Image (tube, rainbow, N blue to C red; front, side):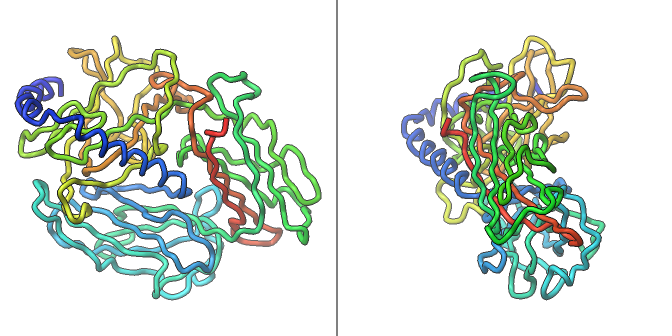
Length: 435
């Protein structure tokens, strides 16, 4: 990897001198960053997983459904060839802990068919790497949901449910409760330090009276991550029509730091966060500026809390005309971290940690590195360190600060006595920038 970077650096030098127009670019990049920030404040949460190496850029344009609302999810992905594949999807009800609900038959929550083929697709146009863009909407005229809760949409190939291509976890809400939540820097661990405390009040309608607190579950996520999500089964205080989760140590999160950002909207100009852009080995190469291990100072920057947007200049349709580019991350470190693994985190990698986004250490260059094939656009990312047998932390590289702007989603599930599924009766998304 180090040798390859040295070679492409030489190849890209002439390109940079010729297209040295950063001042023109900065304005456009800033617009995209602000757009990402605004989008992040609108949507709540979905979670995506891809199982095939040739399937990339799985996106959900709308992330939350209201029960009986006609507006659907818009789901799309790319398959890295011009071959036409037969893809089918099905939807299953899940429990609030993301396990499969095997007590409910599909006919109890699905109206219409139980499977649908994906028939809309279009080949990429004039791109260095061929791909086919697939898309569909759900619910639709052939499949509708009749109950609130957590769901998993599974895409598989050639009519074989065992040949899974990708999954999308999403939720359907029937608002029945009022959620008041706030984030504060005064925690039980420290004051105005590395952490943020989430407090939640859940108010029920006056016609409901709390009979058993075991019927309720709340799930709290930070920036759409599952690795540090918290599920609570018991409130701190109970009132006749209110559940209060106050001063709960389980709801103390690392503040982390603002996400890094790069904008690869151009094949010719080095955008925000990018050092060099050029062609080598018949592919576009994007070398990001080397990041640094945090020195202990918080600097505010606008971000979209890990999200991304596909965007390409000089195109009419970024979905089919955007290029795929090899993006190269580097993080100098005097020596490797022997007590755990380092990952590049964000929606770019499904907010998960796998071999796809695990960084490797190069002893010759004294740095961590990662290379990934990414579609043109603007991307947020963060460095996540996973110590052995411990939870993920941002403190090893990016640091953690109470001032950081984070997005918290609060889900309220209700399973009354005798019920066989978890109803999602409340969902609220708040930001910690009110601190």
